[in-house]
Length: 235
Image (cartoon, rainbow, N blue to C red; front, side, top):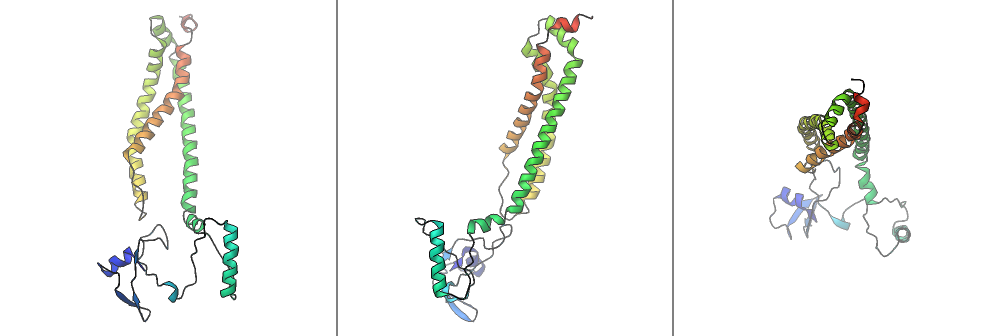
C-alpha cells in the first residue's frame, strides 16, 4: 500500500499492480490510500509505503470492536499477544491521546493567550469606566444646561457615548490590519492551517464597540438622568 504523496513522488499514474523494489525485495502495489500524518502535524506529510505483515515492524495499530468496552478489548488483546508473542511486554497507548499530545504546547499557548486577552479587556474596561466617570463629572453643568433646554436623556447618552465610540472605532481600524498581519505570519509557519476570514475581525470590532458602549453607558445614563437643579444651583 502506498499513500497519495508516495504515488506523486514515484510519478505513477496507475500504480495498482506495479512493482517497486525496496529492502532488496520486489513489492507489488495493491492499493493507494489517502495521506496520513505519521510524524509531526506541523510539517509536510512525507510519502509512505506500507509493506504489511511480511515486513518487520515494532508497532501494531488495532481498531477495537465498538460493541466491546475498552477494558474488555484490552484484555482480549493482551491474551492474544501473550499467546503468540510471550517474550515481549504488552505496552499500549491510544491514538487520540498520542495525537492530542502533539498539540499540547499549542493548546497551552492558546490558554495563556486567552487569559491575557481577558485581563486586557478587563483592564481596558476599567480605564473606559474611569474616563467616562471623569468626563461625566466635568460636563455636569453642560448636561444640566442641555437638559433644561429640552434635551432628552437618549440624546445626552448618545452625546456622551459618541466620543468614546469614535476613539474605539479608530483604535479598531488601526489594530485590525496589524492583528491580521501578525496572525497570518504566525499561521504561515504551519504547513496545514486555517484561513483568516474577514468576518472574524468584523465580529471582534463590533464586540469591542459593544463592550465600550456598555461600559460608558452606565456613567452616561447616570449623568443624563441627574437632576439639573443640583448642578446649576451654584451658578
